[in-house]
Length: 462
Image (tube, rainbow, N blue to C red):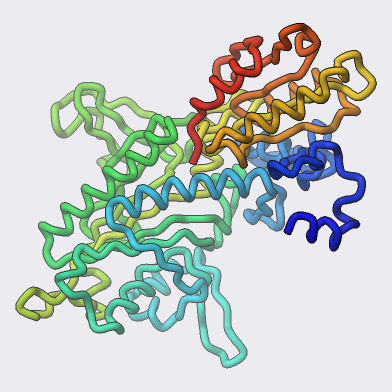
């Protein structure tokens, strides 16, 4: 099959670097990855903020690294490295959601205005909805969230059997919100990715158990990413319901003001407390103010939507009972940017290691340098690292051998690859040694091939 593809696609095979000649592995070459031509240029117009236009560290780094490019205000193109990281993040979320019984669906983006009017939210949400008319003069909005759609779906299908309870339906899709002033890149946009889950239970008690279970799962996701987060009580807003919590990453650039008690685990968004509240209502401890980036939100809805659309659960005696609902969101694209915001320096991206675009960046010698005598070792090392079962798709070669090793190392650190392996002068020694840089710790080691393989076998991947 490989020979057939090569013979039928000569225009793609011609001119490739020697790293593509191996029949053992599919090699990822940096020179073949689509990145904007003005990458790394500090004076690029795309990296300059307009006067009085707020920007964020994550926005500047993601532009500079070629992860995103603007499409229109608050909307972005996600380029190859960003897509790889997003897909890894979604795999983590999928795994945790499915571990607690979540079933993945995919609902229509066009949401009927009739459903939103039935729930009373068409006018309540107002200008934040991106609305449109089709050729038949029917009104729709581009879904910012899907409470009406999922509740109508369940109701239309005749309700839920007790054997299916609790029912947890979720999706990861693009959402739309007509933000008055989008800013901070992916932290506040008009088009974004969100994981939204909707749960159905037969009683309040069961719904509370599900609520707690999903909140624990959210905390597990953020712990998996090694992100310090805080859960705070929150306002139910225009989604409504009886109870709500937000999940935040503490950050100075955060747009939410939080009050945290250091004497107990009480935490709240300031919106939920009286303006003059200074002490914790639970223990009278002093409340300290912090700022946070909201990355998740949970709502106990009760029967707010199920009553309107007549979505019911059937008991074991086939008695229909109005469903008790919850809804839960994680801003996936916001979480991607927020993690860069809180972990990175001003110059270099630091990813949660599991969602770095590639785990290893291999830097071979500069063309024409003395180190070119070790070029064959670079290819052999690449193949050997890729032969480690879980790393076959996680190794990138910076094959731009017209550039110095130093420049490529600086760019690799800016991109945030967890491990950078340099084939330099010591690769010409006997035995050859390879320079291994740990981006998170800054540690530099010179290891034999066996030492490199022993180290990379411990890399965790999704």
